[in-house]
Length: 318
Image (cartoon, rainbow, N blue to C red; front, side, top):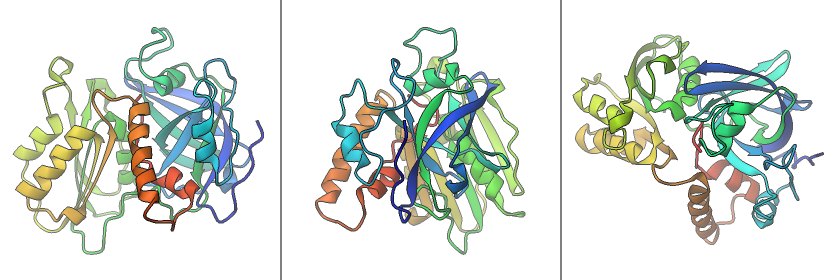
């Protein structure tokens, strides 16, 4: 497939990419490195930089698009679901320049090269079986200061609070690597296995706590929320970044705002997935919301709304 380039003023553009290599990081996570001819034009803003990833259908060797200009989203929705690319959102874990590559960490959710075809979701299954040369398409930023970066602590912030599960781990890692020396950060990360711990590089004064989930009681337990309730938080003005399962995210935000008295404007919260809902259901809900919003404003283009506003994040979620 030869994609057309969106207008140069667009903050996001389509890139054809291929798998360079795959590395298993832990029982629940695999890192895929992508390369491509035009990646010199990709400009990650770092931190929790998100982008759209498009997977081919099982019978295709690459994603199929009818339009990769400003009208791509309408064209994508109009395609036959059996033929149109599977769209997911991920975090750019790291970008390199010589050679031009970027890494994406995928949570596998039980998918593996030898598991059943129904294990995990489309993205998890694809990542578990990815091989060098596999081709797909991404809609990624062409400018560093773009709407796909959510972590933006305001001036006057005294310390940082980060919470998330394994789906948010790539973004948390990116944020920690971006923080300046001396920044105080309190971090809680929920993981499925003890071996899912990663060495996270940071110049910040970060206290990182790993919470290993008890799968037998995962549907009832709230490890992050329970840990926060028992924690003694620092004095001063915090900036909180909260991501992961939508129900947990809402509960954590409620605790921080109502029980801790943190200014709601200082809490950035994002549901990357929702227990009991598929990614397609989340996209349908977000699409309906975006459509309703479009009836009241015309200040953003379709590519900006779809590339930035749809917030169903799936760093390894199905």
